[in-house]
Length: 77
Image (cartoon, rainbow, N blue to C red; front, side, top):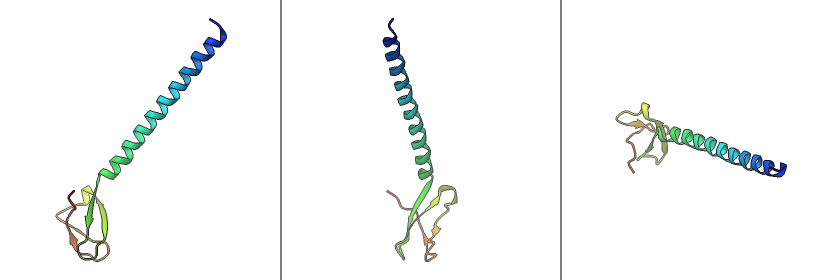
């Protein structure tokens, strides 16, 4: 084989490996960010209109508003 052929094979292979590596990295990063957002509950205060979120494990029968302390229930979509 000619040296140019080896160069093309190595260049194409390294480019494919780089693309696969970036794809793997961003896929894992997106999953990690999504999991953090998914583990939160959203509340809307009916008294003052404040929107706020709380971690899932901290949620009980209701959650007080950080502004006016009114006890609100979770939003359902």
